[in-house]
Image (cartoon, rainbow, N blue to C red; front, side, top):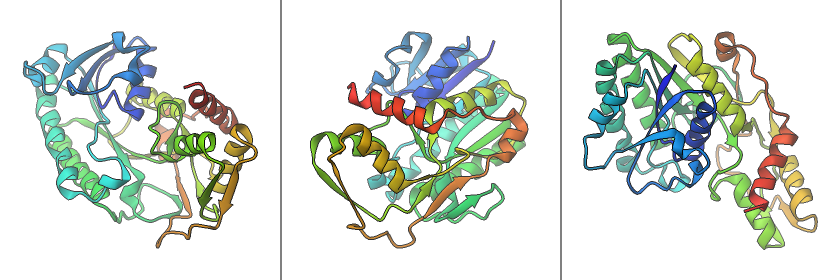
Length: 303
C-alpha cells in the first residue's frame, strides 16, 4: 500500500492527481492551508487525510505520524501570470520545499516528486528534450530552477529518489477561468466577439486526466532520479482549437484573428519530448484530443 503526501491538492493539477490516486487504493495525506477552498476535491475529499499548514498543531509532526513514503510537491505560490515576476512572492516557495526535505529524512521517503515547469526552458519554438539548456525569463522560472538545485543536492546527499517533472500545457475540468480554454469558453457564452493573435502557435495540450494517470504510473514505478518532461505527444494549432471551441459553444461568435500582435519572443511551438519518461514508465495511452476537449467543454457549460 502506497502512502502519499500531496501538497497543493486543492489546486488544478494537485486535485487531479489526488482524485486519480484515491481511486487506486492509495492512502493520501493532503497538505493545505485552513483558508484553502476544497471545491475541486468535493467528490473525493473524504478519501484524503487533510493537514493544515497553519493549523494549531505542528503540521510536520502530523505528517510524520501519517508516515507517507512518497511526496508529490505540487503546491506553488504565484502561478498566475500577474505574479510571475514578483520575486519576493516567488521566493516564498523555497521555504516549504526545505521543510519537506527536512522531514523526508525522518520519514525515510522512497520518492520525492516535484512539479516543475516548461517555463524553465525559457522562450522555445520547437520540441524540447530534457538536456536542452535552460534559460528562465521570469522570477517564476528562476525560482523553480533554484528549487531544482536544492532538491537535487539534498536528495543526492541523503540518497532520496527524486523526480523533477517539467510540466507542459495541461487543460481539463476544474481549471481556473483566468487560463486560456476556460476564459475563452466563458467569453463565448457572454459576448459576441474576441480579439486574438493570428493563432499560428502550436502547443502540446495534455488532458488533465492523462496527466494524473502519468503521475500514478510514476508513483507505482521504479524510476531513476532525474528531470522528465510531461507533455502531450502532439500539438494543436491555437487557431484550430479556438475554431473548435466556437463551433461547439457559439457558432456566431466572431474570432478576430490578427487583431493582437504577437508578444516579443512569442513561443510558436511548445512541446516536450517524453521519450525519457516513457522509457521508465511505459507508453502513455493518451485520450483522443477531441474527446478530451468535448469533456472539458461540457464541464464548463454545465456549471
